[in-house]
Image (cartoon, rainbow, N blue to C red):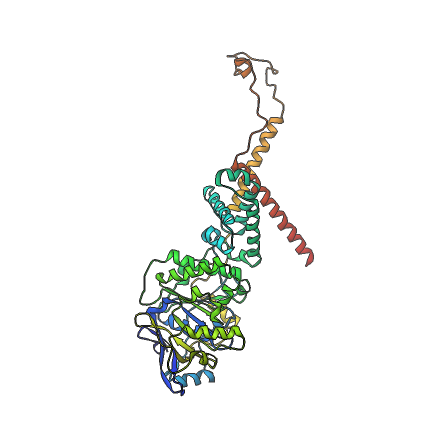
Length: 523
């Protein structure tokens, strides 16, 4: 089967047909153009997920690792052997796919929540202030505050790993804004409060599962098997897609990490990695302008790293124009054209293709059947091929999800089993600030107690002594005055930080205890 769906550096997608329904020629996606990105669009139930599945199969057999977001759970079946079903066998016969063999593919399951796959995490430090501020749609003032927070953490040797680390630092900055402004520049308490509210939104969407350790290593989604196939990483996104802010955070972080870590390769013979993001409209819907700009920038630059990004969505209008212009490989399934917006989408989709004199694209888009698509891929010197009406080939792997038991078995033998499944909460900014603050507070209490205690009389009953008789002279005996003790010493910025952090941590622990008590009473 692998020889059938992969031939001479090309992935077999399906077979085109003429206007009289006669079979025409095979349609391929050339591996050397796999990093030029792509778009798969179409209405619900028209076959987008199957197209994603067969492309992932082809890339895997070509030795290219694949990462895909699985919204409905359908893609999990790619890890199991396909089954002979009537509609699959009929399609194979229609397009002349001979032999039509079944195959299972090497799969690694991932899940931010750790329920349907291995955990995916990163740290606040790896996220960085720039990306974090852009994801929160922060103002310039708020972005400045975040940069100051990370600078304080760097100077103080305070690892920022999870949400509570950054929250503890922000609490301190808010309480000591005046002192810190003198050293780092103006810090607005309002800006600090706004950042904390945005972090709360991320936390409510499940970000506490995303930030922490052990952090994901990019190399673990770029694995190949001993027989040379690319591993297919499937991210369970059914729950994640309900939280678009967190999904956007994950997507941009992962693409940014790839761009930062991978070397420049130009245009290789085949991609180093291919991304598929199903239901991509959830990424762009109501997204702030800065987020769209960030996606556009990453998509444009990551091609030179050998990474191909393929968006899968219902409507080409779901993807911003600046991003759409960079997607060279197109697969367009059927669209409906009942409303003005749908009619505009049909026209937009038709206008993006290189015309075929045999048919009118706008008309055909509304007539396509399930598993049928208009396809145009890059060929020659990177020029889009003439659009063709194509019957998409049937997948070699299972159509439909794995059972829970099957998924568990795949995870048990996964090459990353045991690497990410347990949380590791090492000492970081939260604990370090609390520890230092506690020591400083204890030292200050001891000093206050010493100042308030009466002076000991000693062996001479408190009488003045002369030099040379065992006791050192007091300052009164040498200067005629007694040096006054200072009853108050101004706190340094660091001391203030430690005390503030101690209060913040104590308050947080108190709230956690109260929640635990109330929770137990409600059971």
